Image 1 (spheres, rainbow, N blue to C red):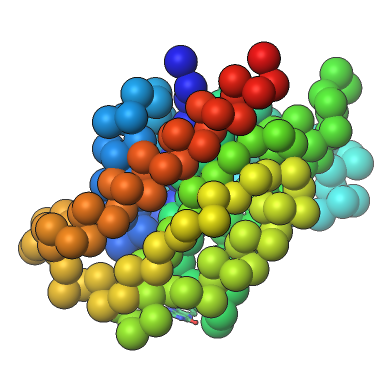
Image 2 (cartoon, rainbow, N blue to C red; image 1 turned 180 degrees about the horizontal axis):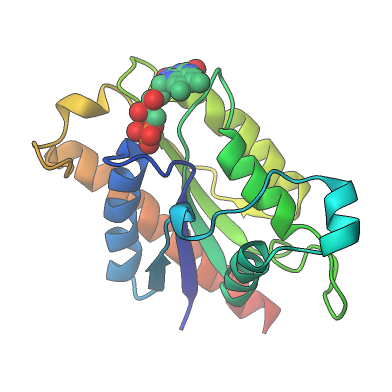
Length: 193
Ligand SMILES: Cc1cc2nc3c(=O)[nH]c(=O)nc-3n(C[C@H](O)[C@H](O)[C@H](O)COP(=O)(O)O)c2cc1C
């Protein structure tokens, strides 16, 4: 069974990006993928520092996150846009996951994997600009990023008081992105086998 790991670049309580990620994950499940949604809050990591890595190695949580990525065929990633780019939280987690340890293959957590990317913001662009740089980053570490993507603008107007996305059109778009990511991942996995 094709396995997708879903994570967001925000650990904020009531994160808009966690909310849209959940809907995309449902769409991917509807296509037969097994989707595991994780919160980076459960994997706190120090800011990457090569000197500290030399002394202490890869920290336990960073290794656990890398292991999770490695065990999955593809990813669903929802990222906030911070000053037109991705938050340090997301980049730091990705940086740690690219570090090689004994027995690892180069870029094993990412190479040959697929990703569907999305963003959400209360602003009018929905975080469209972060998707440009996130797509580039992922491609540069060996991930095939689904051509379709979604930036959900004014997301705060598309959810209920519990932070659940309720707007039908948005739900449809998010589920479709999840579905397409699952389908691409299934095709890519079949090619590798
Ligand atoms: C440092 C910082 C920079 C931000 N820059 C942008 C931006 O460039 N574009 C945007 O749409 N929102 C920007 N925002 C607002 C975020 O979209 C908003 O905080 C959003 O809720 C974060 O996603 P989350 O709800 O998943 O935590 C910024 C927020 C912070 C804290």
